[in-house]
Amino acid sequence: MIYSSLEYSIPYVIVLLLLFFCSILEQKNIKGFVSKKTLRNFSFLIVLIFFGLRGFVASDWVSYFQFFSDVPPIGNELLGFLKIVSFEPGFVIFSSIIKTFSDNYFFYQFINILVDLILLRILLKKYCTNYFIFGLAVYFAFCSEYEINMFRNVKAIMLFLIS
Image (cartoon, rainbow, N blue to C red; front, side):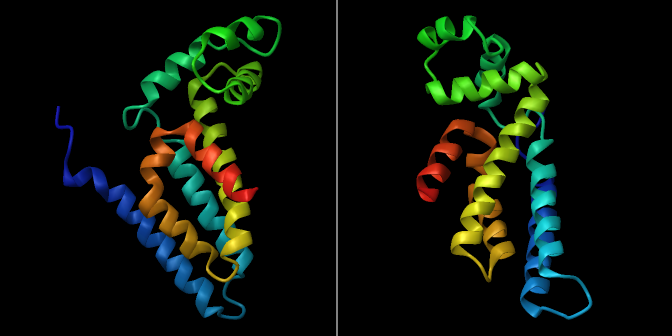
């Protein structure tokens, strides 16, 4: 099996080009064509679908998959689990809440990405009011590795920046 190939980058390049195209449309502000809000929601949805439905990509999914398999749904067992797990208590509780609704890892992954992108949306609205989609494209280009491999770290960084 080939672990690296130029072909693997094609979906990333396509999404990035689509985001840049939407960013240009956002800046041109062509009246009657499409609103900024629609463009922003479309761009947000593209990134959510791309990251949220990625499956078993990169390397950190192995530890998160095992962690999510072991974490109990919210309840009495959670206190004992908090004592033996090495992850942050807030992240364990967050994961336990998701496990209460579904024990499907892909659902867990999607909700994690959704929360990350909602936090990113808050940051972009706060700091990139005129260049929202461009900021999303820059995040996609430079922070994809963080989004794919580090569920916990991205939330911590974004919550810090929001605060």
